[in-house]
Image (cartoon, rainbow, N blue to C red; front, side):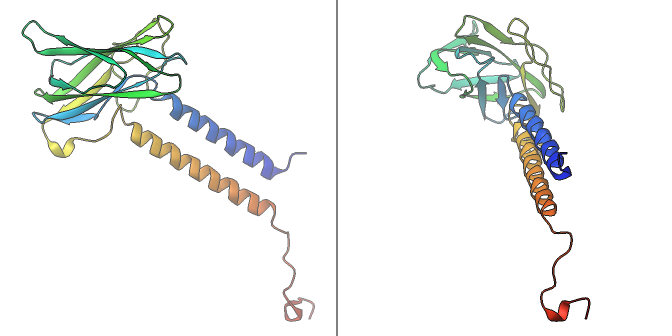
Length: 221
């Protein structure tokens, strides 16, 4: 028969594995940070691109939202940068090609822009994969506090979104939909689970009755 302490340890370990697995898949799509930007304040936006489906990424195309005027694109070493312009010369998007993001890795691309309209700005993008597949991230953004279901390569996934606020105090530094908060929660779960495992092992190995320390502690005297 399996000891109760061993069953408890196995159950805690299983819950921990599930929690960490969920954390690993929560940000499997292209995201943009910060999650909240301040109206009329110049901001560096980071476009984070993780690999998709275990296949290397070799092309990234981003369309800038109408509420944000992007005026500069940072150099991306190893990639060819093509700036897309509107008829009036303003930047409407950017495409990076010629590089590679290996499986299980990610890359960050940055642009400078100024939000000029309150609300939610949607950053639509495309992710070209080494097998010729193109994954579109053009569907409705994830609702706050909810994770969109995983979609196949032929089905558009949720676009990245940045909230534009008129109040600087409301602007948060969370990128990609609050990934920092998510990881902090997962780390807390992991540490708590490890602590419970340690406590369980100590109690499982604890003798039923401690021996007396000396003659004066003998209960028969």
